[in-house]
Image (cartoon, rainbow, N blue to C red):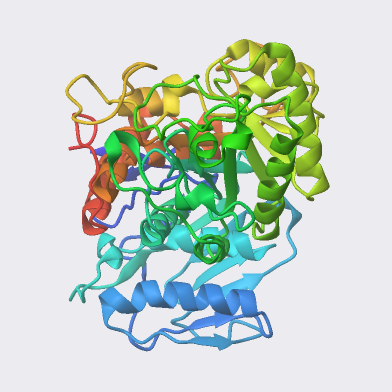
Length: 510
């Protein structure tokens, strides 16, 4: 069998004879040249070490990260040392180089019989090169126990850089709450596929999941339950900072979302004064949308928002605050526009940039704000006309909570059934007439959790569709073909099994 695994910098495909040593790389790199000589490998041994540029703490940290990944399944004891040059054979070298063609996230990975060398202009490029090296190693590199196999890597040369700046995943912790360790686990899975944004949907009608010290009843009362009356929960600010730091070390920026003016029943139930009639509603454990709204006419509403955004901005490393803005069916249009305009100024005054679901383009937002397309194509077109950058999250393509097919045991289907092929086989730049790459910041795959209750559920709905979303965000469009991807994905399934990921399997991936 002949498998098209590697693709050059142009559209020419390199046919590679299938063998156990041919590894499925996802996302597919920009340029790959395999050494066609037989039996040319770099072999990891207990004498292998990792060398990084002198006095570069960031590279040393990445070196320790990959050493930990390698040492566990091999039983080796790779160490990290400073080195100014390629001093010895048999090692892995991480090096910062001056190469403008790599941008801020690109890398070069060279595997010879003597060494493995990863070079980049920035440390995040080195980190992404390390993720590719993981996939070049045998699948057993993901094991938590020692495997007695030969640890070798095919000799190869790779130059790689992303298509889009924004390659994201969203996790809804409001409908059902997931603790810190679950979020960290999700972050680890995102990192393997070079995803660099984690959007946390922290508040909704069913629960408020982030501690706000100036409004303590948001979590004391508003976090006490979830959909179907399931247990609630929330992140303390220290929990949240732990997630932020963990993601930051894996070059993932966390974007917190405080949804408003709708999707706010948990807040309204916690503080009567946020309601126009001054009466707090009961906590809500259903999945209906569009019934709640902050009282946009009251000044205390904006004092509340300023306090919430202010505390959140202080503990968020990234430059963004997501303000939701979707499905505000209980807010009059003119009130909605005034509300979004004012909230944008509050976010700006706290040193952050706003992101909102595509409805926010109906307000007078600045072109420094970001619109996240999910449903209404005319809103995406309006965003492009206003020169507002767009994150592409079409619900009919990459909403990970949609069922794969009618027999899927969990999930919803209001946006249709989304199988693996449908979630992969589309191009962000041609999905909407009037929206091109010039307007697109990137791609994000949301996972809403109305029916998702456990980490097993998260994995089942996200994998393998999230892997496809990662490739859409990273790889050039002309390199992506469904037939090739499905073959690589089928090869990749063993790695998912070793990672103990509860992935969905069908005829495309068995």
